[in-house]
Length: 131
Image (cartoon, rainbow, N blue to C red; front, side, top):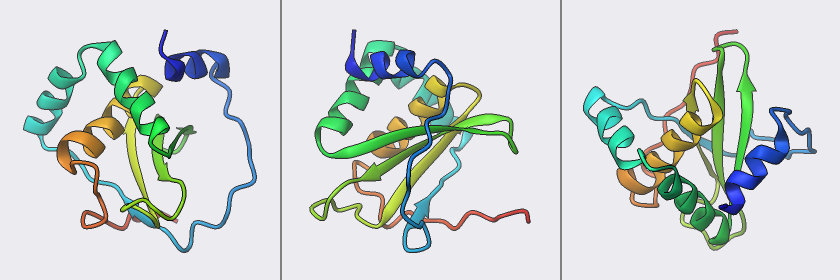
C-alpha cells in the first residue's frame, strides 16, 4: 500500500488542527478545469496506484499535501504546499476541490503534473471570498 493512502486511512475523516503561519503572504493557484481537461484528468488518474504514486513522489520531493473539509461548498479541498526555499513554487499554494478526498487529490495532482508540468507560479488566480 502506498504511504499516502495509509495516511488517508489513518486520518479516518478527521481534520487535524495545526499551527499554521499566516497565508497573507502566499499566492493561491486555483484554476477551474474545462470539460475536456476534466475528462483527461479522469482518464489519466483512473488507476488509484498512479494517483497515489504521484502523490508519494510529490511528498518525497519536498511538498506537503493537506486536505480539509470545505463546509461552505460541501466538498473537500486538497492543498499542495512547497516546503523550503528551493522550490520554483515557493510562496504559492495550489488547491483543488472534489466531492471526496480522492477526487480533490486527483484534481490537485492533475493540475500539478499535467496542466502546469510542476511549475504553477504563472497560473495564480485570486479566489473571491463571499463574505
